[in-house]
Structures are given as structure tokens and as C-alpha cells.
Image (cartoon, rainbow, N blue to C red):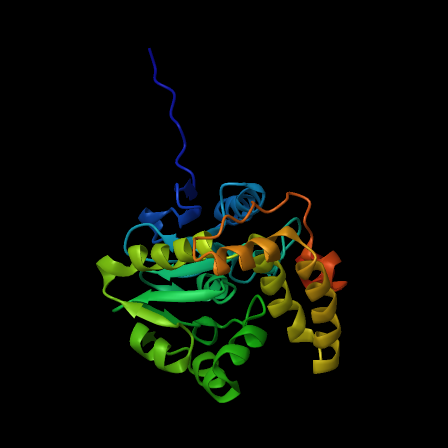
Length: 289
């Protein structure tokens, strides 16, 4: 009798009792090279984590010794000279629509699309010795998937220009000095440190507050101060009238851990602020028109 072969998922999804989901890019035999199957499953997992009432924060990492070195080199070789076909693909900024904090635990090589996905996370931890590169200029490519917008906002224009124009390799300690990552740990301490950070958020922060603040951080990048202030007033009104604020104050005054309710499945921070993220909703083919 033949045994059924169960395919290995290109992205693993595990949820702990502490409210932290660990999302693992899982093609270690290809150093977690990005391909259509991984992309589809990753965005599917993000949506699953967003709906999962157990999840209050998530950690993104890679299986094996790499985080994600970009598009699988075998696939890039086949695509050379054929032009760009993005039909049916989702926006690479799907991570921004997540209502829960997303922490990157960068365990190894991080480049190209892998770097873009790390930059779309809220906070980045990196293992000492992990190496980074934008890579595009050294492969004859343009700055892809919005990295020329993301990177300057994290590290400044001159530093972003250096990294994008040279395509040079830099390590985790330099990434820390540039402000690209906020913490560097020894390799064996990376995932526990990122998980502990996420677990503290899960235990002590309001899910409604997290959804609102994460949305505000991204939406406000498109605004002047007056626009951001107007959206903040609308968010403040909703938060102040909700049960999480009452629980936050009661737990503080009673000197006990908070017991915030889970995030309602239909809670939409964009409706609360009146400020959507249209660039996340667009598919790449819409952006090319």
C-alpha cells in the first residue's frame, strides 16, 4: 500500500498559549527563496492570523539558516528577459493590512523581496552574523516592490541611496547602526527574544489599541500633521468610549495584569479613523496602469 505524501507547507503557522503566532518561511532547501507558492501561502497565513482570536501578536522568521534571500534564484533565471507578469498576484504590502503587530526575527540572509517583507514588519530583531543586501542593482533590476519608498523612511535618503545604489552586503550590526533593525541578539537567542517581546505585547496591550496604532502609523505616512491629527481625534473618540480603555485604567489602578477582550472579527481600524490604505488594496496590475 502506498502512503500518501503530505506536501510540506512553504509557510508554517503555529500559535502558542501566550497569544503569539510564529510564522516561518519554510523552504530551507532553497534558503527560503520566494516563489509563487510561498507568496500565496504567506498572505493566506497573514489573513488567518488576522482572523484567529488566539493571536494578539505575530513573529515572522525563516527555517534553517536563512530568513529569505529574495526570489528563488532558479525562478529568477527562468524569468530573465521575459518582462514582468504580475497578473493574479496580491500587493506585496499585504502585511500592512494586518491588525496585529508583526515582529521580524531575521535569522540569516535577507535580501530582495525578503528584505521588503522584513521592512513591512513593525519591529525587526536580527541574529548577529545575519547578512543583508538590497541586491537589485547587482542583478540588473529596478528597486522592486516599493523598497525605494520604504527604506528611506527607515534609514534616511542618503543611507538608503548607499544601500540601493551599491547593492553591497552589510551585517546585522551595521543594520542596527543604520536603524534598519532595533535589536541584535546572538543566533540562539533570536527567536526567544522576539517571542518574549511579542508575548509582552500580547499580555499587556489592548488589541483595539494595537490595531488602531498600527493602522495610524501606516496611514499617517501619507498625511501632513493636520490630516494625521484629524484621524487621531476620530480614533481617540472610539478608543475612549470602548471597554478596553475601562479595563486598561482598572488594571492600572488595581495593580493587576489587564484582561483585555480579543479583537472583534469585524473591527476595522480604517473605519474608525476614516482613513483607508488604498495602496494595500490595489493589486500590482492596477498599479502598472
